[in-house]
Amino acid sequence: MNPGKRRHIHLVGFSGVGKSTCGPLIARALGMRFVDLDDVIEVRCSRNLGRIYAERGEAAVRTLEAEALSYVCRRSIPSVVAMGSGVPLTRENRAAMRETGVTVYLSAPPQVLLARIMSSTQSGEGSNHAAGPLCMAAEPLALIESLVLFRAAYYMAVADLEVAVGMHTPAQAAQVVVRELANRGVILTASD
Image (cartoon, rainbow, N blue to C red; front, side, top):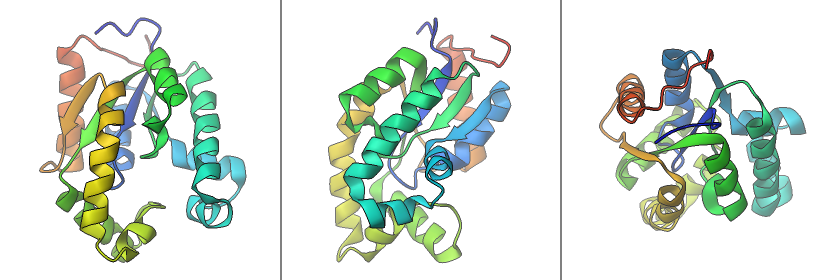
């Protein structure tokens, strides 16, 4: 894997997998900036992503994600970028990620994802806009299982590397990602 002009590290995976938690740790280890695509959308729209979902719907959020991805990909500062879980669903977004970065798919079993989503919802931590609808579903585990099964193909299609993080702490997951990137010759730092 030769990064060439690809200067970003894109993190993809389902809600609750830890993209926004591991991302800053990976960025720090590599001397890069961290960008959470959800935060970019919230700043650009001056409102919470959950509220945008409620007011404008999923299609509008997907459009905003594509615009934010385009904006972030054009930046010349090497960054670790946490993607919303639906970003890789479109061909255009996958192409932008391939052209501008190395993509890491963070995966975890649905039971782990549900536990993390429930925990962040109960503690009030994080800005996971999917937490509410997922937790309120009649059978949240079944819903997560079906969504993960559907989306995994898109994550795998764009990923240069998959790291199973279900049994890792965020610090351990970040260490594994950095080690695997180094093992594959992808050494991206702010000075490159």
